[in-house]
Image (cartoon, rainbow, N blue to C red; front, side, top):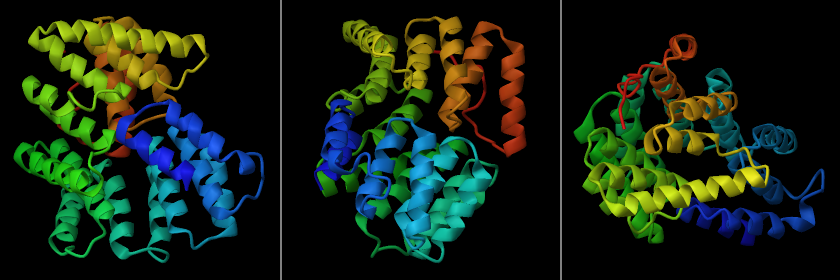
Amino acid sequence: ALALTYLKLHRQGGDPRLLGYAEAALGPWWDNPAPPLPASLLRAQLHQTLHEFSAAEAELQELVRRAPESAQAWLQIATVAQVQGRHGDARRACARLAVTADPVVAGTCLAASNGATGHAESALKYLNRALASGDDLPRPIGIWIQTLAGEVAAGLGRVPEAERHFRLAIAAATEDSGQPDVYLLTAYADLLLDLHRDRDVVELLAVTSTADTALLRLARAERRLGLASGREHVAELQGRFDALIQRGDRSHGREQAYLALYLTDDPITALRMADQNWRQQRELIDSRLLLESATRAGDGATAARVRAWLSATGTRDMRLSGERQS
């Protein structure tokens, strides 16, 4: 229970120390090859959060071997596969959810993969139907569906619809736990940044900017507004990432690429970090960072490689221009 609390708090605020606390709480089972199922699930969640995807998947595959009815484990397997761009594996895990979980959970799992691989229209229609008929949905499930619907709508260029979904998700999360998680806030912030609504970004993230991902977007908006706080936040982020490198932590390539590309005008460093990150993470933001870094750095071969992969997976997204500016 303590480990779960720390993981939930980390999702809300992004404080990396909470992950260490969660690992310590799981200490009695950390080296146990067959811990109680709840401990195994939390251990996998921690590996996943730390970007230790191979360890997370190994844990989850062993978990579903022991407990094939574990819906949460199958959902996590799908999530890990999707993060790595293995959409076929993600769909197969979603299919297993159909017999172990609520049909809406299974359908939303599949919509997440479909929305990223050329079937965004049908995915969004499903999500909207689920929301329209889901007055009795558990609130966390409703927030998940609203967030995903916002992302899919944004990819389709449907800005008012995307914003409506994000705002509803934020309102529900605030009512549920007092504060939306960082993922939801940064997803909405990305939409606002694309629209150059920088003051709205500052208002959205000013009180929840401790996480690297949120602080990066806040600093970007502040920098475009010419605020002194933007320079201060860039310096703080550089200090954080320098400390991570000194500790040998290479799991924040996405964030380091974002800093170099949008905040320090260093497309060569951005390209190197984005390329390293893309080897293990291939969500939309990862492809976008690599594509934009390659474009800004004049690396046509890398840009072509990313576009070829996007074409092969069927990815269609209005945000993948490869020519975005700061």
